[in-house]
Length: 358
Image 1 (tube, rainbow, N blue to C red):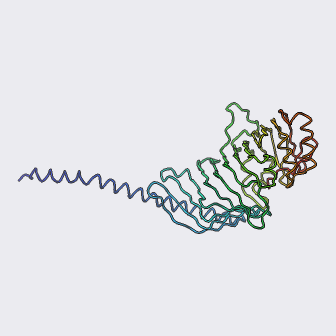
Image 2: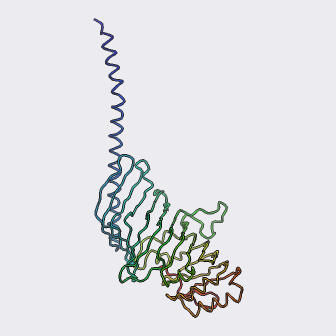
Image 3: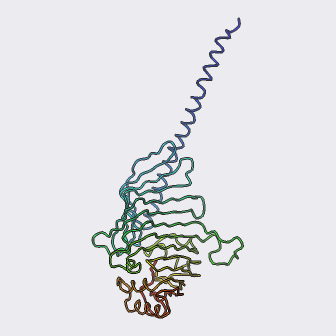
């Protein structure tokens, strides 16, 4: 007896009809398994990192939110987040969202849609709100990952009992970090050379100072825009923060900012700045020399002299007068800022305390 050819054809046609659905079901099951595994792994690693920070003296608190984003994204939420360093600096947020493409877990985005509260050691808390507060990290398998942080249209509001914050709002604040990329023919002993250095870029766009503060005075009631880039040597010593902050161990190890370059505009005043190397004293104050090629610097210096707020009015007035004598009121002039002994000098005139890292 021979099988009915019609029945065989029907069975074959049904198999062909079901096979695509079976394959799709298998793919969905495998992908879903991978998605849940990835989400659980990320959550576990975050918990382990939090535990490690606590052992190092940090205070870390949060509650787990939801896990979502299936099928193409992995999205984790954390509520009531608070992270405080031994130095006293802290960051808190009502909600943080961490997400990545499920097929590329090497790049993650961190979002703080409800804003954050920044605590400055001995200076109090500042609420930070904006159109967007986000950070991204990728290249996690590299020695130094690529990091980008952006605050779009941030507004800074000191909370009761806190010291005034230098700026009230800005168009944008950006920070970028990446493994150092130097010239291919640079000698091995060149500043910043080697795999233990990172490139850093900071941008402050259209910032407005608080009323009566130094930024408002320097910008002559206009806006302050600054861009600074540098290479951080001995970057591995930035790890293991203690009560003094991440830069304390780096300073003790002889860390330096090299190849410092930047541009600043404040109202009508403009300047390009450069320095071969800047470092820090044991107390965290910057030391070194910064060269400026300034256009119309007198209005900024005069405004700084009138602002007070830690500015030495006598020194700033003297610097303004000396700048005017040199023709700095209307034309271009070369200036040198010197950071030494915890103070900032323009020529022989002490303007203000030197910037402090920790």
